[in-house]
Length: 178
Image (cartoon, rainbow, N blue to C red; front, side, top):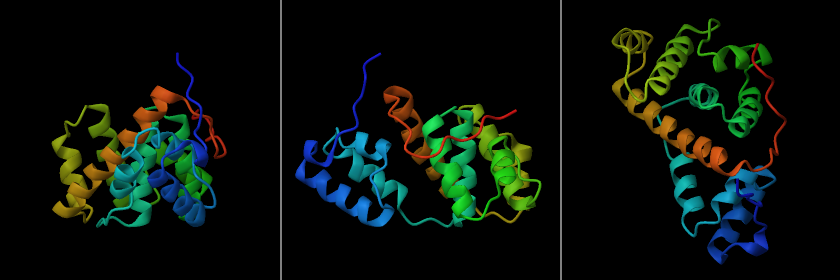
């Protein structure tokens, strides 16, 4: 398989250098997967617009989607990043593990979300009607459903990019599931 080197700031276009500078200022670094997007003149900017767009979802809800999708797709990079981010958003180690497995017994609303996302990703977009009903019964809205699917799409981009490039992890590795 072709090896992908993570491009440095000096190896990317002027537009991407500006994005690197903004990422470094905001995150303290340019994550390797984001840097790899800069092989494309427009890929990184397009992805960041999607990822940073407004959403009706709360930060924890978005992280549930990120963790479940990344687990279903077995994306080591995204699991590492979102385990780290999930903990920053207040999830315990045990809660992150449970979410990755597609549940959240500690919060009925997040549990309905995790179950729906796991089902939809595993079934290539098809949804179990009972899980969709449970999602709405938990208090989610039509707007939330659309935003969940947008976040699923966002995570599919990074999961697929990692699967193709296997760039080095620059977050602590997520623990293996038992």
